Image 1 (cartoon, rainbow, N blue to C red):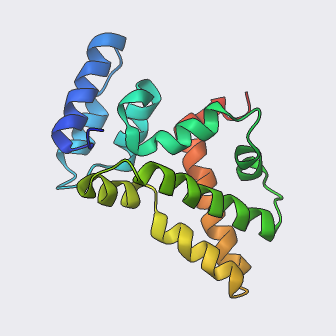
Image 2 (cartoon, rainbow, N blue to C red):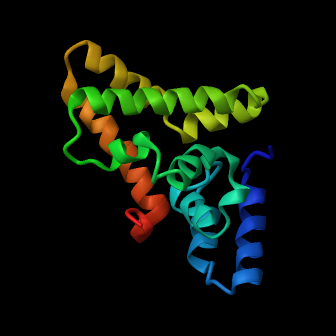
Length: 157
């Protein structure tokens, strides 16, 4: 698995432009002004046009691709999910993260943990057990918004 570095992000943007003739100027500009980080907007754009190149987002792509059978996806998309269902969904995301982490080297793990917001997800789970369902709900809807950003209008198809 090749980590997503700034140079790799540039490479992927140019590849998308060349193969799919999509305007990438905005994303090149964002990337050039972002210091040492890769803006989430750039990551989402790359994933939209070439999801196989971003192993860091593999979990979202797997869950989405199995959306017709997967109770996790259905729960995440359910705006009226109970606190228990929200906590279970967050826990399932952590399980998926652990499955992916076992095959990564230490450098990839750190980037993956940051991209997946593992610490926030764990805080949401912990908050549920401390009786702070508001925090759990907030984290749950943050995960849900990532799915919306990644898959846009494709969400319920």
